[in-house]
Length: 337
Length: 303
Image 1 (tube, rainbow over the protein chains, first blue to last red):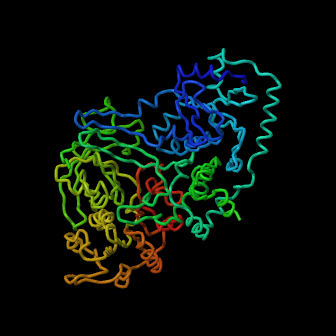
Image 2: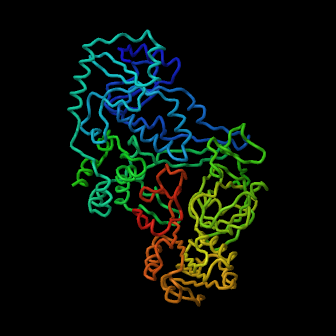
Image 3: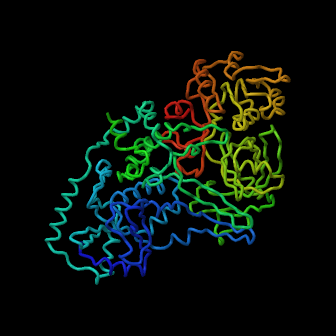
């Protein structure tokens, strides 16, 4: 079903029942934060600084805490993740990132409970991307700005109006539940949307073809290219922190004197030298070259081995925010040739 | 530091706490998610850096149910400090008591070395693949360890010692940097006494007291005569050792699929998610730590 939606009224209705998250912030820094009304959100942002993965795999989260004195045990996150959530305004590449993380975290014999629970309790209202950035290369990864996979509903902004389209049963129910906020859509608007879609698709960066990238990468393990790139890299880890598909984390125990014992899970980065350092002093990826290679091999070779598609969404964050201009596009193109 | 810190059932819900102390999370996957309340029953100082901890599961039922195979590892939990993966060094036939050889190195192990008998810890496991000892039946067995690698190999040594009749000739080769680093020296005589087990030790930098062999572990191969067509080998040690030893074994004519190595990687989550222990697209926490050398040769960046 497709209808024009009065977004500010819809959000007013939704916040009564759900935790609503939307892009908040400006060009300097933005992330998905809880909102109470449409005014707080900034739906014109091309992409938030922090990826959507923050809502499924928080930068830092308490796994549990134990009060030593009273022997009380509390499992902290249980309370938070049972809340029903709505994510509003997620772009196709963000949703793709969550789809890929879902494969990692819920696939196989050992699913991650927290991630699974969060994914189950989340409804995603996507937003069609009208303006790919010059660093975007989602076309190479099979994502297009109007991609609808993984979303429950999708919004498209046409002439300041929002058109809402339901993509599955969950989305369908929205139209029944809040009939007042929707109005019928006319033919002109639909035509306009198709034209818009066409023009946006033309803007996509099509310069990269990832066919056979795995085979190429597997052959280039000892290529001097890795050494060359690694001389530039300063191991700041921003490419992995802001990557919507980077999955690494660290587990920590903390216990202050007289305080509760806590176990934390925090983002970690394979770019850090001590990431793989072992007790005996051996470090399998002690050299910068090996770490850079690991990042590329993981996304474009190992991820294909395990999940049959590359672990990248083409959002371009790692290109935009890299302080020393390590360009994933440029490197992949070099590997291809 | 407060040594009386009581081990808490940190992973269970309030409601779920049972008197036995056995913990189940939502996903009940055999032994995977259970933390056994245990206590340190003995500490033996092996070298200035390494100690052998004897750890016993407190609950009688659980103690009898707990079993493992040579080469597997377990997670040792020290509340407030963290969890670390450790190779089991004790005999697989000894129920309920595990021995862990631990080097004083990181945050958790430094605290462990301060702990005394009677301190509470938690163990989870056992995890991982094991040395396929049954496959070695009626064959010669080479057990090769370097440095701390003997900790992981010791349970395999126990196995061959206890099931002596299963195997033909058994050779144990052990090399370290200097004589002070030799582990389990008090057991060498017992091993030698077992019929047909030959023990060779070698050090790189001898001191004045040392009267044995001097050199690299690969030098030991000049001393042995074996029928290589019917020989299996287990190699444990620092990664640099693998390459030299396995190449040597290959030259001797032992097929790659008959060599087994225990790959050492840093592990945090044990679920194949945190990406620390990956060797190519394989995760050592899920598919390892024991691999045959043929598989290792086909993994990228393995050694």
